[in-house]
Amino acid sequence: MSALRPVVLLAGRVHPRVRERAEVEFDAISIDAADAGLLNDETRSRIRGIAAATAISADFIDSLPNLEVIANFGVGYDSVDAAHAATRKVMVTNTPDVLSDEVADTTVGLLLNTLRELPKAEAYLRAGRWAAEGAYPLTSLTLRGRTIGIFGLGRIGLAIARRLEAFGLPIHYHTRTERSDVAYPWHASLIELASVVDTLIVIVPGGAATEKAVNSDILGALGPQGVLISVGRGSTIDEPALIAALADRTIAAAGLDVFAHEPNVPQALMDLPNVCLLPHVASASVSTRNGMADLVVDNLGAWLAGRPALTPVPECTGFDRSGT
Ligand code: DGY
Image (cartoon, rainbow, N blue to C red; front, side):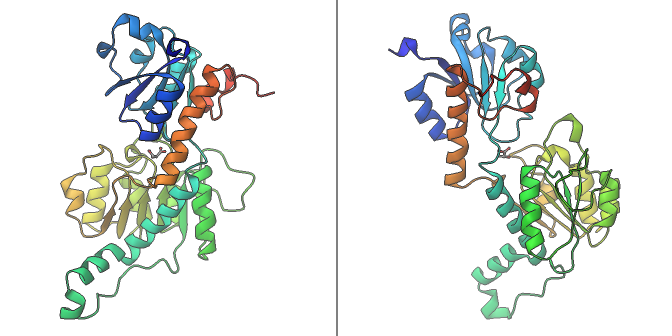
């Protein structure tokens, strides 16, 4: 019976629910890294799908002659060479929508923690300092009176905007193309956005188009009351420039959930007092990650059964099967 099931590669540290379901629904093979050298020719020729929790390069794609689909765990799929996959008509899927609200909620929490120093205030209480020394110092930063700039107004960016609108804050944004369905002021460039707001939330995809887009010029434009919140990909921020801007108070503070070289975070960043740092947890609740896991397996199942992909990435929509 198992010979009839499509062979799917579980690449990297896949979510347990992806593994559990894949082992039931497919003939699953696991490897720690997407390295063709870890598989023999016969195995490589049997693989029709990949559940990806690690980088998938063009070379790796080319090493699998019968590959049909790569289902990425995460909405961000910058670690999968989707452009190359598309040239081979290999479908690539990601996990949009199911995580938007969770990531937006976490972003608001990170913003408040950065401004109002809530993690530090809790540490102060737990250390017995409230009783011993008195009230925690007043925070110099507040959300009140801020103007929000969102770099990337996709599904998650919009969910963040809606939340902060409810906090009574003006919202501006920068995307390559102006959206026709929102009334928020659009700015044609990131530097223009940074110069009219004091709170910049970065939620663009990673990859070459956004590599180090937030550099010293952008941070300078944000200014001394400026706060940077980064929840997309660490590659979008010029990390050394950010560290310098935080150290010399070019900007006031930053809240970061993503880093250039995860899970490694520069010591210089950790040593700064005006940062709030999270270990890439924006979507990391059990229910949201289960939703992402189900979407990975459902995409594999659909495509391998000859049905349309549920959530194809834009590079692959051109050859998706008709849903009708
Ligand atoms: C995503 O979905 O891209 C998040 O960053 C979680 O990995």
